[in-house]
Image 1 (tube, rainbow, N blue to C red):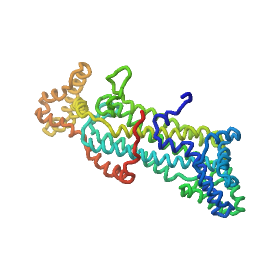
Image 2 (tube, rainbow, N blue to C red; image 1 turned 180 degrees about the horizontal axis):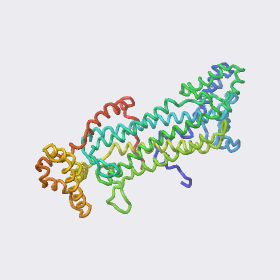
Image 3 (cartoon, one colour; image 1 turned 45 degrees about the vertical axis):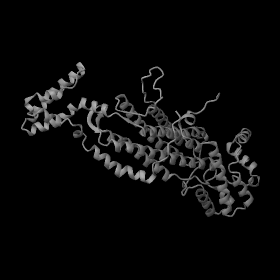
Image 4 (cartoon, rainbow, N blue to C red; image 1 turned 45 degrees about the horizontal axis):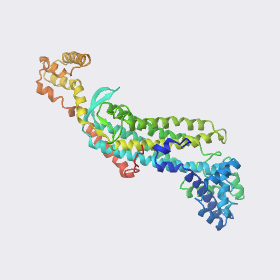
Length: 474
C-alpha cells in the first residue's frame, strides 16, 4: 500500500472494463496479432512451418511480465521486449515473430481492438440505464409534478415525462456509440511509414499479396475494413471521435445527476439510500446524494479528457510523432474506465429511484394557483367577461398573493382572492375544478407512452436489457 493506485480500477470501474485495458489482455492481444500475421503470411506463401505456428498458439498466454520488464529495461523498447520474450517461450517461432512489422502493428491494432470491445461494453451499459429509466417513466407516466425553466416554477409536467428527457439523451449517445462501432476500422499491416514496403519485399513485389495480407489479418482479428491509408499510426482523429462520444455519455449522466440533486433538495425524488448508509460524518440526519455527486465528478473527468486526443491529433508530425504515446496510455483507458463507472452508478440510481408523491403534490399545489389563472381567465371570458379587464385583475391579485408569500411567508391565497372577485362570475367549485393538476400537464402521459413504444422498446428488444451491472463497491 505504499504506491499510488488508480481509484478508477480500485473503486469505481467494473472488472470487465478493467480487464479490457489490463496487461494480460494487452500483451495477449499482441501475441494474437503476431500469430495472425504469421498465419496470414503462410497462407500467402511464406515459408513458415507448422511447428512455429503450433508453438505460438500454445504459448499465447504464457506471459511472464517480470521477465518482459527485465528485457524492456535492457532493450529500452516495450514491443521488442515482448518479441524477445515470446521467442523465449516459443523458440520454434523466434525467427518469424514480428516478421516485416513495425511496433505499431501490435500497439495500434491492439488499441483499436480494446476500444472496440470497450465501446461495446459502454453501449450495453447505456442500454441497461435506458431500461431502468424506461420502467421508471412508465410507472410514473401520469404523476403530475411542477415543471421548471431557469429553475423557476413553470407549467406542470409529469415525473415520467421528465424521465423521458434523461432517456432521450442516452438514446442520442447510443446512436453515437453505434456509429463509432460501425465505422471503426483496422490499421492492419502498413509498415513503418504506412507504405507497406517491408511486406512488398517479403512477397517479392507482389502488390496483390500485400493487400490481401492486411485483409487476412484484419479478418482474423474481427475486422472487415481497414483505414485506406495510414502513416505509422492509424488516424489519431479516431481517438478524438471516440472520446468525444464518451464525453457525450458523461454529459447526459451529469445532467441526470444534477437534476436528481435538485429534486433531492426539494424532497421529491431521491437516489437509493441503504439501511446502514451514513450521509454525513457530522450530521447523522443527512441523506447526501453522494451517488449522483460521484456521477458528476466522474463525468467531469471524462469531458476534460477529450482535450488530450484533440491535441494529439493536432500535433501528429508528418507520418508520426512519439509524443502521443505516454498521453494515450493514460487518457484512453481512463476515459473508458470513468465512463463505465459513471454508467454503473447511474444504473444503480435509476434502478432504485425513490419517489415522494406527497412532497411532489405539495410543491405543485403551492404554485398551481398561478398556473391555473389562464384556465380561469378563459372560463370567465366565455361567461361574457372582458378579457383585458380580467387579465388586469388576475395580474393585480397575483402580485398581491406573491408578495404575501414572499414577504410574510404565508400560504398562497390567489384562488381565494379570485373567488371573492365578482368580476369573474365563477363559483368556488368551478374555480376549484381548474385546480386539478392533471388538467395542466398537457400531453405528457401520452408523450411518455408514444416515446417508450416508438423509441425505447425497439432498443430494448434489439439489445435485451444491456450489460448486467455488478454491485457497487463504494
